[in-house]
Image (cartoon, rainbow over all chains, first blue to last red):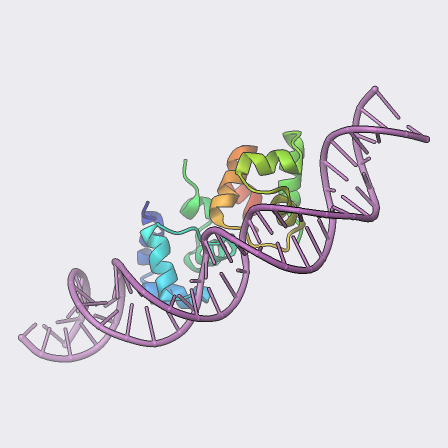
Length: 64
Length: 64
DNA sequence: TCTTTTTGTCAAGTATATTTTACATTTTGA
DNA sequence: TCAAAATGTAAAATATACTTGACAAAAAGA
């Protein structure tokens, strides 16, 4: 399922997918796939994304 | 670095590495490596571990 | 409009997470 | 003590995360 919290947190920082990708040292396609949801990223990448967006793992990746 | 929070949470449930591995559908070696710390598991595995141990991502995998 | 930026997607390749098999050491409990 | 269970570790194979390059469509701004 789509990760709308990620998409929303990125929008709140006014960052494009490419901006976020660069901040996390991955490609734009990887960020796109994670937001799209059909993906299983590594925890280190999730942590990098969280730090770039000033969020925690629970806020962006934990469900219920 | 070692993940002592994970090791501790597992001990609190009185589960062996193999018990936890089965609960997460991975091998004992994978759990061992994650506790040892020189590893970068996928977020889905981290979530499975959290659910097996009644913890959240922040409690087991978030630093600072 | 028109142009630029952003997003969506795909196929083929590379890097690495995870498995399998196996053995040694440590810990636990009788 | 002794045996069984639990842990630590390693090498080779497999599955999959992530990259690279590329193109089309949608959104944004002038």
